[in-house]
Image (cartoon, rainbow, N blue to C red; front, side, top):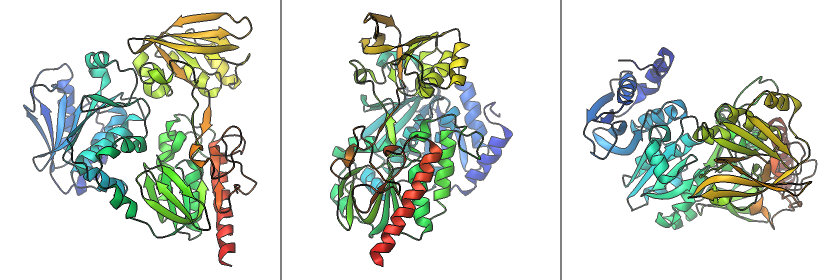
Length: 521
């Protein structure tokens, strides 16, 4: 029986994807009763019919498991991967990738990361609570699925929070992804894969082996994964240089942007799609990719040595810094303590958890007003707090917000504290900057949208930074250190825009190429 979630076009695509399965893959669902079980069965049955190497089965997996839990097996052997719920929406790709990789497709992780995960000699059970509308969740799910395939001691389960409300309430989860390891909180809210790998460091047995595994000396190492970094890597590769790109995640902040309408020649796109397009373009060139890794140390000199969070060292003749920026925090009591418990930075990811509830958006710029408009279709009421006397957003957004009956805007106010009870946000306290009067507003969630802060903390003492933490560069993207260049949102270049970052990345690469030519002249 075909599922309503699987169109003819999707099924045809799946037939193409599964043509090269090397092993048989079983989708095995737990027996039992659940209102959504038949829908899930139809969904899995429809997928299994696209290939004779895919099989749908119903069994008693474990009496403690839900009737809408299914696991993936390869050649009748468990892979450690399971899903609780119907992995549609953004998680559909997680399921398909899990099937393909279980069936023998390549696991595209850095080789040192693979070896590190394989070295773990401890039973680890991960649970990842997701929202099907969250575009950050799939990366976590997909990475942990890969860990399970690399190491039989690691098991992982995707759980659709919308179908397991009792568990969500029991654990007090108010943000996704929410990751548990062996029953304890492992990561909450927006989290990078690099950070998760670092948290597993104590369980990894082969750090010394990784540190000794070196690439040959590179001409250019690009640090970052956003538009500036990818542009710099492509331009460097086109010059015939040996190029490595080191990134915590491909796409950078762009990956979290849903609507992009100002990239000239592209009328409309999304951050996730643009990330895929940029990565696909870079794959046309000989660029070594070190993803899900951070730079922990840079040794200056005629030849620079970069140490990664994995312990690996890379020697290079030039460096291009393109680490971008990250969400700026309010810095008030109750903010950090309640991330994932009512404090959020991504309305697209965490908005669904506040359906029918009152929320606040802190920030009156474009991102803040866009967030308020998006949330107004879910939340009962959205209150916007802006520090300045007037909103900073574009007039078209302000006008759109004014048409929403459930958006209320306060300007010239300062948020003082985020208040929580029983590990859940219950109120926000703010002060009128003119009268000094303080007010407490009861609500369930606070979305912080007050701009970005440069990702330059690791550069202190390496290159000169301004008071805002931006890397100071000249017209050629040169920094205060010879052979180190910088571009994009991490620098002093004004107007943080995708198209500007791409141009700055190209410029920094051309400057680095000129520098290297002069060295060998």
